Length: 112
Length: 113
Image 1 (cartoon, chains in turn purple, brown):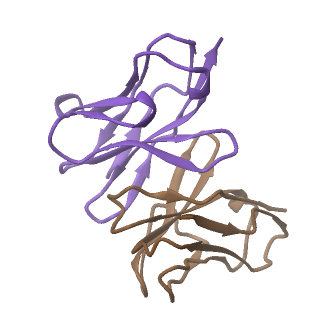
Image 2 (cartoon, chains in turn green, yellow):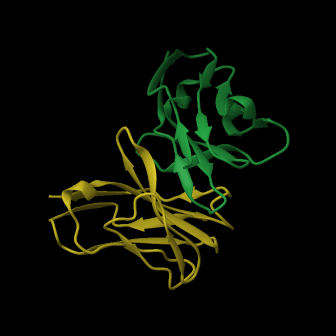
Image 3 (cartoon, rainbow over the protein chains, first blue to last red):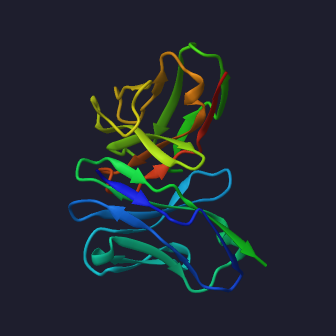
């Protein structure tokens, strides 16, 4: 069965510091991977996605993610975090059958 | 403006009283889906629809029904709500499939007492 694991429930970083949010997936075929962000009281917004090709994908708001098949990982990174990046981040995988699986999320706090 | 709308945004109801949460999108998207979000569990897919009259179960379909009679609408029906269905519900749509970018509605917070 497909699954997504986000091992960090909560992360705190200082503004201007780098950020890496971890995501591991379990899926038999080539995965379709996504990162979504949810700001407080809001719906979800797509940050980036990976289907195939270059394993380093660029997204909106200065985020990037790297797909590593050998590690079944799709970690999200940002070189310099801004206070406005404080939000909840969800990794997700889509199956060939069009089902969608989210991780449990990582809550990001940014310290001024 | 391209958007997914949900109504109501907030609802408090009692056990066993049938309710419907509406979802509508104005982007002519083929794919629509319902999720519930619970603390510590992330979002879990309830049902999804690839097109009119085509619906499939997601991960947690028990206690829910859906219908897709028109392309733009995808209502979520709770025939006999129970307290364990208290949750934050999101509707989403995508142009072609679950593998495309999904656009999410603002959410419906449901409390069942």
